[in-house]
Image (cartoon, rainbow, N blue to C red; front, side, top):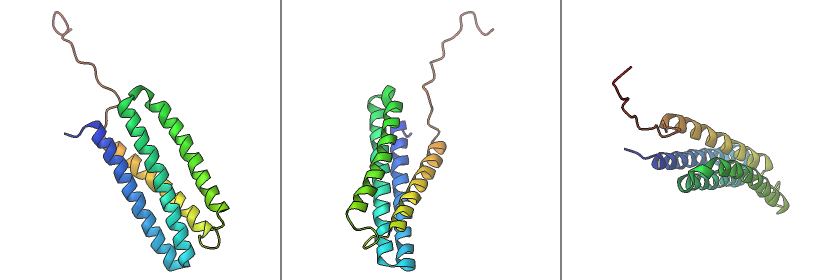
Length: 148
């Protein structure tokens, strides 16, 4: 029997693997369609997307195991951090001077968007299929005097 932690961990790992595979596929398409700068842009975008989402998901999973009462608050803070981290990564790449010369801006952005949608879709599908209870049911106590 799988525990809730094992199921949650598997969901995160599978989401990372599928989003990584989608990024690799996008890199191949970019290389065939638009050349090396597009492929590099897609690769960097895929790494940014999978890296940010994986870090956030594993952090939320860890906190939910250690402090279940704080997991919702931590998840909201982590989501905000993920948005900021994505923006900062894009600013760093933009200021590095690599965009439009060595990295195609459109393919980089497309890879981030694809990574986000694939990650969310896989996590939603796997989480709904996992049938993880939202709460622990109270143990039933027998009613005195029999059934009424």
